[in-house]
Image 1: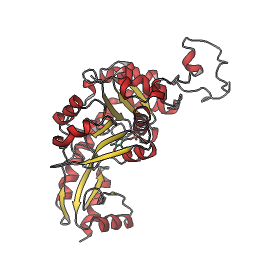
Image 2: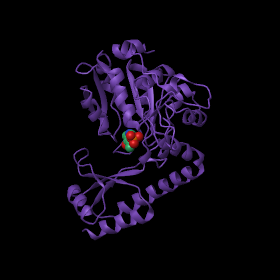
Image 3: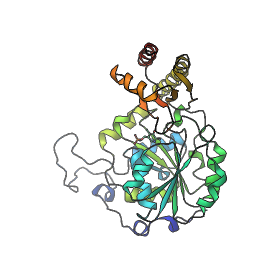
Image 4: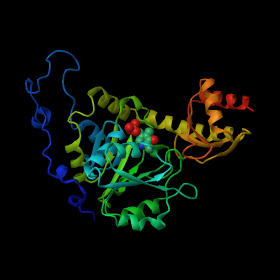
Length: 342
Ligand SMILES: *Cc1c(COP(=O)(O)O)cnc(C)c1O
């Protein structure tokens, strides 16, 4: 078991958090003259700093306790907070497996933390054979695992993630931004087994709320307390919290859309495979496809001219582009445009 006190920055461990007016008064009242708010208007009150309504809903949905949930201003806030809580700038280090989501590296750089990047091997899986030497480095505090991985689209093998959880004493962040499109089970149900596990999910992808900026971290309550202590007091606005609650009220529709996108992913993959310039369409457990294509950069620029924007990933995976699954009409437009390019 990881002893949290040993891996949290001293100043954070000792930090007395800001106590907002909304934190201090918990009961019901008629007159609120405590927070210097304007008494007029519709959005005049500060949002709930603890996002209690969202946590109650997620607690039932995910079968975790409300104190095992952190609600962030996007997953980006969760990633940044992890660095700020666990990594001493200029001293501690983090590790991830590449190619992967670019924010781990940007966030590491912002926080002056070195990020070790180990290449994914054979079908973009983790090579566990050399990890033990990294585990013994006492400055290694964070390991980021993205599953399904962006931009490759595959699930990371469960046994390999568990190997890391069992052998590494620092924090393991499993980024499940695309889990709702995946056939693999979430690691959320393992937060009671591993006290060094943080599972990160988002409302930006499967829930269709990228504009709302809400990301979630699930972990044991001690870790969640640290996140709450370090976050900005009012980190998620009322309009954004309400948008999430609204989506949680419409789960049937959300689920239907997910199924539609998964069906469309299969169709798009078949259509792309039939295009001559396409060498390979990697299998995907997410809402995008990694495509190996002749002259990836030229294809990318040609598509821009045709007003179709995809992601050029050739610097990450040679000759590859990443295509998000859109509506059937959008995908057809892409296919027709690619067919014209011979
Ligand atoms: C899109 C994405 C996210 C989502 O980030 P938000 O800040 O919640 O929008 C997180 N992780 C990965 C790997 C992603 O691709």
